[in-house]
Length: 309
Image 1 (cartoon, rainbow, N blue to C red):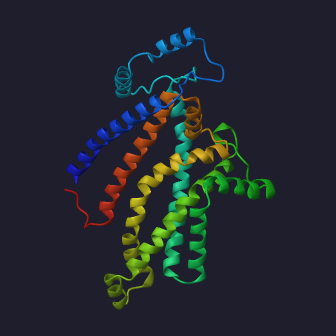
Image 2 (cartoon, helix red, strand yellow; image 1 turned 120 degrees about the horizontal axis):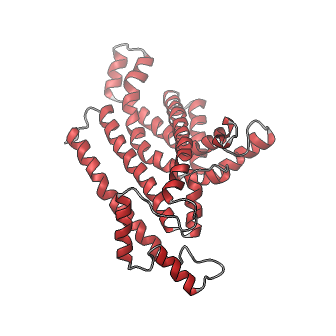
Image 3 (cartoon, helix red, strand yellow; image 1 turned 90 degrees about the horizontal axis):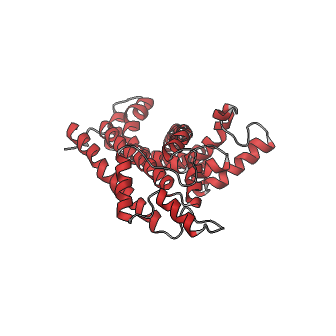
């Protein structure tokens, strides 16, 4: 197991190098540039700005310089935000996205597992139909529709919650509720469906029938035996789900005016801010590969049959 962990950790390095390399060249070969606007800059001014940021160097030279800075932990200067570098803007906004994403994925896991478990135990009853109906809604309706609907109902009509804002900027903690529910909806739906199908399969297995034949209590069968085996598909889903819920917060952050990383990603895309775009991609990629790594470790703990050479 230790050898596998070390090997996987070392494997993260080339994966990230490939992602950084592809991102670096894609944003630079695309038409346009960070200094292009509605009004074209004088050629002399543009050349001076490009020389300041070494953008007049050959592309491979730029790449080598950028990779050297990455190894030093420097994501470079922002071409549009002059006050601070990319590191500042990412690490100022990333905690907000992480807080929102962590709350959302927690809600997804808790309510998704409970809903899927009840649907499996109460198969073909109103509980099952209601749970799966909610899951279908969560999968079918996009976040940019769910968010405004929740705002209209709970903030405008009922006036129970604020329409937007963020608690770190002086607003109430209530500002967390609507964006977290919105962001959690799709993953709640997927986890509920995975839990239901996996638990139904587990409940029909031979060892569960043996436990029933021995007279074991139904609660013990469900929570002690069925739940552990049923969690394998859910756990395998959680790695990319956590990364996607952070990246998916781009839409939610715009709808609810949350000062998260998604705001900078959208703005840097419009501004063609090369370093900020690649910096955000690097952060998202690190989250994804780390979560996939942790999922593999947890997976082996849940199922002793899985071994890593």
